[in-house]
Length: 634
Image 1 (cartoon, rainbow, N blue to C red):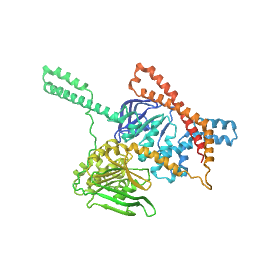
Image 2 (image 1 turned 180 degrees about the horizontal axis):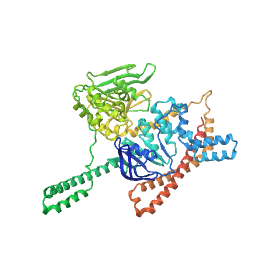
Image 3 (image 1 turned 180 degrees about the vertical axis):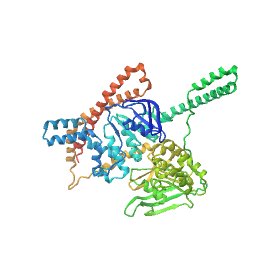
Image 4 (image 1 turned 30 degrees about the vertical axis):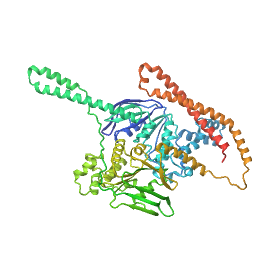
């Protein structure tokens, strides 16, 4: 287990975490949350041994292997699949030892190493690497492309896949969804729920946290506190705690006022001196309570533009793309009126951003018509907008350039609503984090008093409080919204209707995000079926002969199918047992002294079932692959 005792972490002269204690048990999934700059990344560095506690202790089991996502990826000629397999360092080490044994013609050592590779399921690694890459949005053709051929965002996906394949005891993931689209986020949610190791996850995606984790480690006012339950449960518990803290603080302040008043009145009187001294001592002994912090530092809204034309913007029979030879969307039709709240769904690269660029007028239509109302103000948020900020300007200068009539005080007040208080308003843009730049772009958009908002992944790099402020602002917005986001909570809170962008078309989607997940699965199956090369037919197929061949293949696969079915039932049984054990381990009373024997028994059962479950799952997957190869030979 991970055990923090009176832990204090400093960065330079700044104390990030002070006198905090918590315990993270094996197999638990923990969300690490807190405002930007509170110390989340520093705590990760401490888990990795890169940062030592300034006082107190932080114990991580020495035998645990730890996986984390690399932040840099060199431009390698190595294939994407091989790069991901590098994440299993033990396998790569065994590969090197095997090569050496073969060079030395050491048959005994070669056999020993081959057995070790088999024991860690090394022979299924290429298939597992391909499965991870498919889940993260890579096509079959891209698996053998060089790492250097991918852009920065796709290389981050490669780094994530490399961490996921590592068989680590502890996985530390810092904002893993930042470079993913909604499809990959939904896939990653499912993968992490099946992960049997210990997970500590930094994320600003509420629904992602709710779906994956079972505990929250919250850093606030230099204290790290562990809560049981998902993020929604944590918010409820924290609200109750803050209310109690606020009541206690108010009560203490009344007592302080009363004691201070007595001391001030009677300190000089000899007859009351002892009583005054007694009250002074009581004042000194009062605990240092702080007022509860309940208000977010972010609070903004989109001003009512007053004039709202009808319709605002529309495209008809629009071919959208970058040239006549590079058409992405055909015959697109969309009409935006005040109150439209549309979320765009579709696979990465299907054309969602292309559609928004075409609506914004940044990308000219190759054919068709685009109608834009006179005096229409569009608030457009995209990665391109972040790049268009003037890097050498300060935040306050950028606001005053956009709004020359503003005084410095007005500019500061406006920036304050987006978390730029005091000296932060004077920060130079090229020194800002991604989250600060995103907040500044939103501050600039609000100044435009838009009637239409085109938002392409606006929550990238934003923390939970700012995301919540954006949700509230969008819910109050009276104009039209088109939204692309991988944040499910944002989509479900601010969107009334969805459109699917895919296969070169744009059309309404009547379901919700759960229905979209099913649509993705069905679409993937259809795509695989379509891509499978058709058998060349020279003569008419003899259907009777074909049925006979298929029956023979099924007969050949029957023993394997029997084994696979048996393993699948055993896997389900162990999964259910493991879930029951972990539910009991999540209960605070399990760790009370009187339940020590029960805790030890649960930990032993968990330690026994986990490796059995992992091995059975691997065997089952291998059997299924063998059956597939027999029944459906390529």
